Length: 206
Image (cartoon, rainbow, N blue to C red; front, side, top):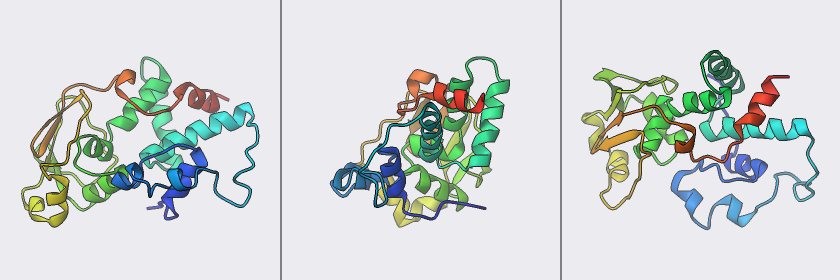
């Protein structure tokens, strides 16, 4: 499967926004956005005025990078969002939010979405009692995610579930210990990302 293998901090700098791709590091002074808040490359400090298309493209790229989605998959999700009732932009964000890897991250079972994808691929979670190792699974209301009992023995999981680590899950996810349940699908106000989804809709509507 194709995947981005470059320096993820460059992605934050390119979007001029913290995408929280490195977990807890993003909250420290070591964050690239704190140390070097400019566009990557030798001409990074010379910011140019963007065109309408440029603004729309950047918004789409920002959303892709927040969730770690490849271009073809993102386009597929947009087509799904367009076919659903309601606002296309909100439908798109809702689809991205209910991916298994994102729910694992939102529930506090990983420090970042990238780490959540890795943990899912390694088979550390079960969904509704069944093994689930595909990060792109789209969940629905009532689905329950649980950490496998054997996985709790690993050092990584012990760090993740450290009692001193405070995690606040969004209201649409109920977390009890090592289990998380989707009690309702997220609304736009439940998604706290700085994304102007209408610009993405305008880009794909051309």
